[in-house]
Image 1: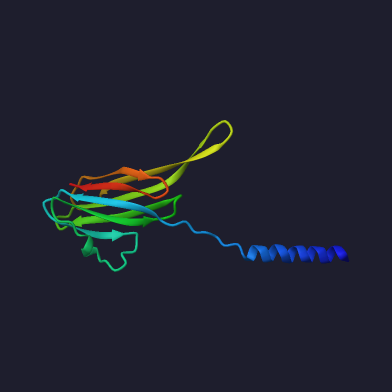
Image 2: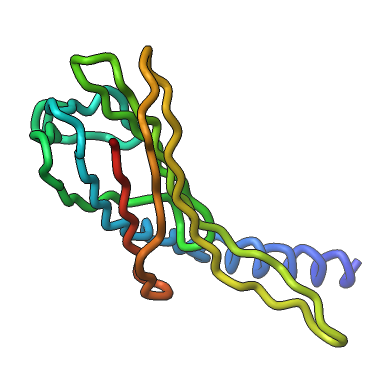
Length: 151
């Protein structure tokens, strides 16, 4: 009978201890985004997978031959993707994506995780546009910078 009391006591202690454990959530990784518009007309933000907050798509408009910079939070430190589109009144549109994750590699004794970032642009409008993206810098654990061009 005493063993049951010990089991119950042990269970109560363990459950009580687990109840006080707090799970830390990772902060979003900052992605500094630069978009250059080389079209003969301005472009408008037509979609984005992040909350715009107090801003509107018009706040992200880019005039001809001008660049625009902004910062977006993207997922956790381990994985995240941003996706957005810019379109012109002339029927050219680009879908831009950037993201990061951890790539695993296996050595003789241990597996290691290496941060990996990417950026890409694809034409998706009625008329062909040249859409490019590239990662230009990285600060491990804090964020990275990507540049996109629409021509």
